Amino acid sequence: MTRPATLKIVAMDLDALADAEGSVAVLMGEDGALGAPAKRVNKLAKGAVARFAESKSAAKMKPGDAKAIAWPAGMAAENVLVARLDRKSDPDTARRAGVALARQAAGDLTIVAGNHRDAEALALGALLRGYNYTDQKSKVDDETGPGEHTLTLMVADPDALSQGAEALGAVAEGVFFTRDLVNAPANVLTTTAFADQLVALERYGLEVEVLEQDKLAELGMGALLAVGQGSDSPSKVVVMQWKGGGSEAPFALIGKGVVFDTGGISLKPAGGMEDMTMDMGGGGVVSGVMKTLALRKAKANVVGLVGLVENMPGPNATRPGDVVTSMKGDTIEVINTDAEGRLVLCDVMWYAQERFKPSGMIDLATLTGAIIIALGHDNAGVFSNDDGLCEAFLKAARAEDEGAWRMPLGDPYAKQLDSNIADVKNVGGRPAGSITAAEFLHRFVQDDVPWCHLDIAGVASTKADSPYAPKGASGWGVRALDRLIRDTLEK
Image (cartoon, rainbow, N blue to C red; front, side, top):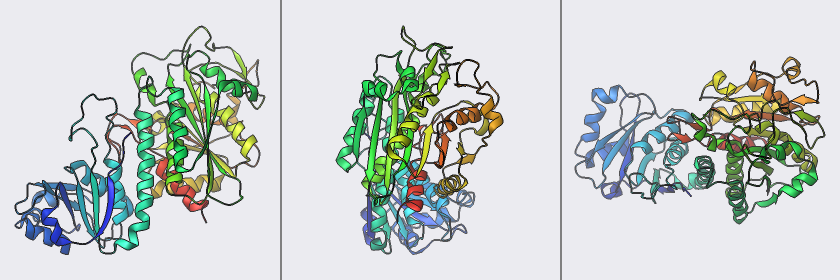
């Protein structure tokens, strides 16, 4: 399991910088001005920082960029990193500066932040970018592996940031947990292995329960079970409860956990099918959020549920044209077995509402390719029946620099799901594919339950570096959902 760097927040000690190993980072204003810490490092480095600040290369730097000065004379560090960050920067730019520093850091990283107001954001960016998935490599060295590195943040008042440091560490742990789950291959992260990893979260104070296939059948989860019946891997639902609030009803997070998606009988093309190890991305995000809440002892009641299945062709696999019955009692005509995520979610959502009577509910899923066509890889699609909850989530996503864009719902889209032989079809054709998928889920939201559906197909895993992560799993959503809970549920 990948762990973030150890974060240490210490008082300014400019004398110690001469002997600091790895990388030492300083901040340069947008006008090229150097503050007192940078001037001290410049003196140690025999004027190298000032020469760089006056160079054409420095003049071309944008806010949040960083450059390296290799092997500075007079210092033990392998390099000095200079980040362009004005004192009046916003948190997004500070986080991006932290990312830029971490990308170029050699081993341990000391960031001399002084009294910069966005020091925490700077540290979080560096923590998040210090990730590299190496669990499946037979040989790992210091250059390819995450290592046991330390991130030291030198600030003017460390006591003021000490409490925030624990929260930063909890968020980074949750994001890394999500990334590890999403990056893991399907022969390693089976439904059973996934459930075992979630049960292990009990050590942090979560209450975790695994509902096995016989229990799911007893509950009437015919839609979810139909997805997994072609696989040897048993279908499961994992329920994680964090009880950090009072007596109020919990907020529910629901995650699609399709550990591998072949498309079933509606088989996907071979090209790119290997990427379908990430089709449990929604379940990965829910898992990461729950770990974060437990680590930082959130003062809120939250329940996270993950539906774990594998969608495979086989003698018992669901066929196009089959009709299955959901836990709600609605019958569903399966037009396409590759539209399986919504079948998983509808039963888990209904179960969450029946059992927990939540104050609100958000589901996450790598649900449709259509949302990638609409929004690319920079924004998740957000669908909601409640303007208040939707705007609160979008506000949290903006604050954490996680792209999200609201999409429409409506009866004309729902009518595309009308079936001649059952209550509803699981697909509504090519037009507005992500919206009709959301309308299918909307059918399983009970009256007066505020709800958001997050289609994260474009943002859960990327072929190129995302803003805070190397290519592969991004961990998108953990920070935004954690902030939503902090801002709206915690007293």
